Length: 68
Image 1: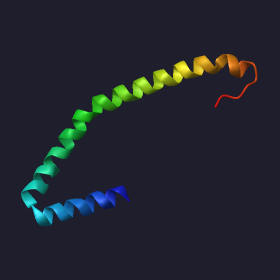
Image 2: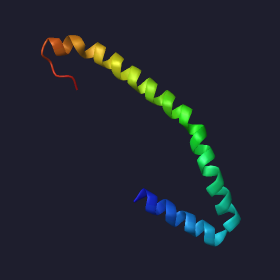
Image 3: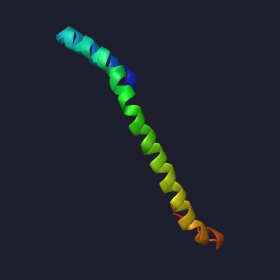
């Protein structure tokens, strides 16, 4: 569904202002490449926080309580 809406938006932009649509088509892969390091950092931070949360809840799990 997301792809369909993106494609529909691109065709609408192409009908209204085709130079802007071509510019968007050329810049989208560049923006995706620039966002990759930020996605990697987010994934690493999320994994580190999950590890810390797991370590903090370990005593409760060992005592038989359920973690929320």
